[in-house]
Length: 115
Image (cartoon, rainbow, N blue to C red; front, side, top):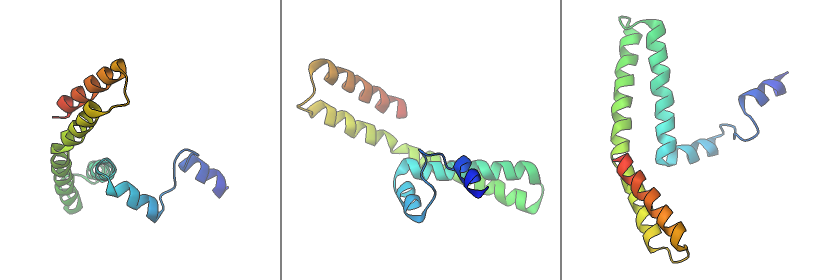
């Protein structure tokens, strides 16, 4: 029975949450953002169920707002990653003309979108 439940919680394509997988996830910016989003939305659900006027509800609401601000701050530098990929695509010698053009347009559009 436990094996069936484990298969539902962790599909074949998804790695289980081991300490090494957690470290891999939390070291990159998108992984850290996903973990913060999980805690932020989890606290939002807890505030909804506990109520804003309770002691724990008020503390969780402060946590939720702080995590929201942190996630916004993390996203401030996200355009730099896309800009770096744009510059790398600009100088990549192995791409053919159409591939180079499409890659440059894609990277430039993502850079502008993230800003």
